[in-house]
Length: 525
Image (tube, rainbow, N blue to C red):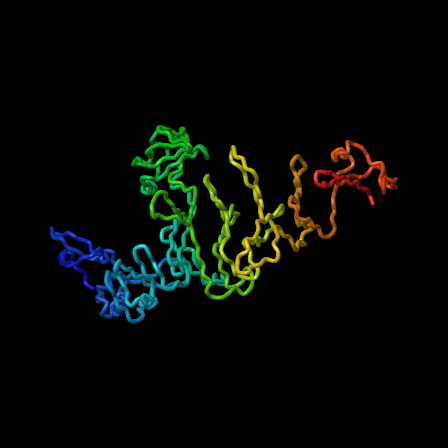
């Protein structure tokens, strides 16, 4: 299509719409399509009418041919198809057959008001659509961009591909068993500060930092108003400020003010000879979402969720128990790094807090046996001290008084209506422990002391012990502790008759019957 001089463009009245921009040449106002300024191919330029009656399929095919597709950069040796974009202005476009893309991944940039008819014909576009606020992909495929609907990356080389199906060589697919499709990909990578200013010779005022080694022209070109500069004099009590300007010679930076951690007062000055970081990144988020429920607003939201995941297994029931196909997870956190991470799921109460840190609710019909919490940790060679499946270690804030803390509580199962029954419920059940050198169903290591009881069955129900019961009593040397005032046993036997047993036992067993203490001496067999 031949180029058109701006002076020969239609007058302002000839075109309307948000996709039109005005141009002025020789005092004459002209207009042209914004898509033309952006060098995007416009289906209207190739005969598309957008009247909803005329078949525009051929025009769309012709636009694809002229969209100048190119192969996106991936850094991989694997050949990927070329890609291009086509703009569709407002209108209703009748599409009757699949658009011929000749292997090109086409992104159809649909303006607000651009409609494909019938609605089933959106699939015939044979590519992606991009509208204000949304991007849809008909089918993902292959590696990187093609395997991803939308991606955003921070602190990485600009225009680098998302790490989805990230094979750099074709043979790498031999080590990966699935073909992934990701609707939204996000990553954020730690980077060093834009500039590191040495402390030697550095001086400060209430609004400036001056240093001896000038910033390079490249760094000066990357400075922005509003960047944070942070001193390195102390990892806890450092100073921060927002950049407002900088000297052309690269030897000083001006901030609006300095603020030490924990001190919001005006007029602060960092100590001289303190180094500084320019635009440091000290905490990373791949996703950070917030919802706010506001008070005193009639009709406003009274329910909110910070993050919701919906999973739909409409394929088939799992072929077995946990870990069998089809495998569907609601949440998957995996450490892909070199070193250990702190916590896979962290519920921070942060002052006001939550009633529950973790809750499982709703009707569960997954199988004959289901679990609300299931630990399948495989302990590696580095774990040589202790592996703990569940640990509770709460604390109290200063000045707090709590009636009781329960590290584990089993409450009565709520029996539903309609003839529901539960044959057996166990507050705690331990079974099939045999793999270790010592296997304990319950182990209490509570030290003796006032108010300390290793095992306390407080209820009125009968206590039943199956198997051999081995009770370890109190040694005779501490007989005073059993309330005998240091006295030794002198008569053992029926009706007080003398016994062949020694008068001095090895120790004593203590039992209580109501408020009555019963003491049993014991001996070697």
